[in-house]
Image (tube, rainbow, N blue to C red; front, side):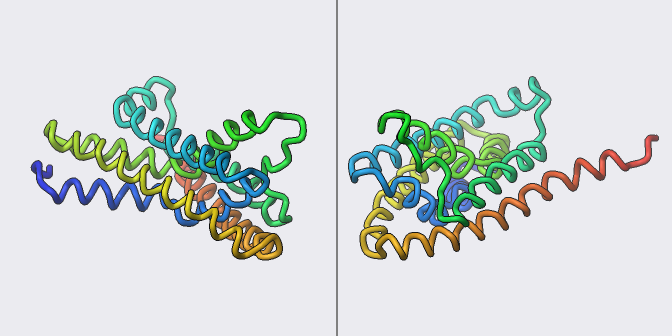
Length: 214
């Protein structure tokens, strides 16, 4: 176990920032907020990062109990996340991003919907983030280390918000044609990530099913 020291705080920050990984989410954020004004886009970014932070806090506090109570495995979450990512990537590949059509709902409802899912979860707070939070919480042996873990969550969330908000400036510079090209390219990448996530979760489950019974 690590003692209360800057090393543990750095470990928490680097691990969570790597797992949240907001940079690849920027093109997706730009595409689903392309029809919104700057104020609404900022609200989406705020609600998405707040959702991701809330998920991290919940699983840090009661992750082990939630997994045990519902008998949920990380592999199952990877499979579900892979399916969701594949559907989102497929829509993006056609330059038809998921949830960009909101003629039948108000702007407020649309903002809340896309902020919670897919942006807040599973994109920012997916299986990797949840697993990392649970492991880091188990690794923290003192109150100070737990405070450092929660502080890292807040710092990562704040940086994610700033990255998403500043990403809106990119959209105005590349224009609609550039956004379509970027959306298709990121859609392909998201679909590849989805396939990797799906089989990463499916592989251990299949091995367990094929393992000889003692």
